[in-house]
Image (cartoon, rainbow, N blue to C red):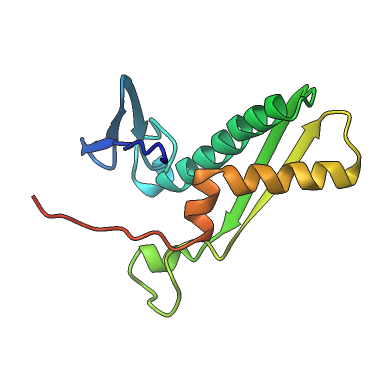
Length: 145
């Protein structure tokens, strides 16, 4: 039987654009840069999407490497994406609000051939829940309280 775990995070609006988030015993802050009207006390929500993806890929890489007995000396990801800011500002409704695409540059430090690295990355991507949620439609239900 599959092992299902519920992940729960709370996010509470504070002054201005500052948002306090709680995930288990961890507290983090989401904000906007000063140029965007925020206080820059934390990364933007868009940066957190990439933070989550990079963190998940790195974690899964370590799990896969251990299971496959690969000596993974290091992994580094650089993630980037473009989006139309006019959509989130309400100035344009002809495009979607999300990223037009996401590029993940992965540097793997291990004794693997190019083909082996490609297969390793495919397995990491296949098992990464954050990547899966970004690449596939996941139902989101909004529940007013």
